[in-house]
Length: 142
Image 1: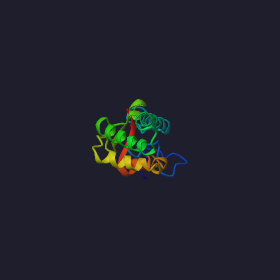
Image 2 (image 1 turned 90 degrees about the vertical axis):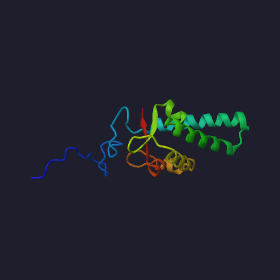
Image 3 (image 1 turned 45 degrees about the horizontal axis):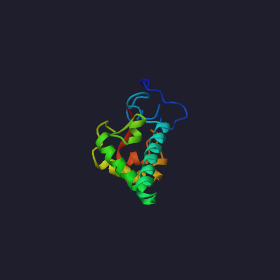
Image 4 (image 1 turned 135 degrees about the horizontal axis):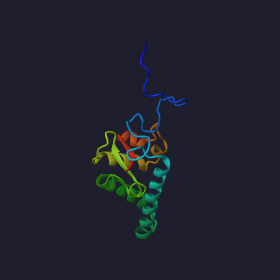
């Protein structure tokens, strides 16, 4: 007689995930759990608002400046603090799949893809945007 599976597969989930991050070994809730959509959207909204204010104040609303400021803010804060201003404000941080600091190249790749916008709106079953999937990162709760 085969052994019973200790982790039940939920009904209606073809990937067999119990919650976002289950496949990655992340807890369902609390510290270390995968960031959900609400916090992610709030974080990027904060970052975009700050970049828009800086663009308006210093560059008189030049369209190109906002995206450049956004990219610089993302790379600098992700590399140094593990999260952008928006991430830190809503209690998130970016780590590798192993849970370690991202280094330099992952935030750069992630930011380039994020600036293309499309990868951010395409998620996998763990609620990671394609920019995170390609960079090998996950946005988690602090």
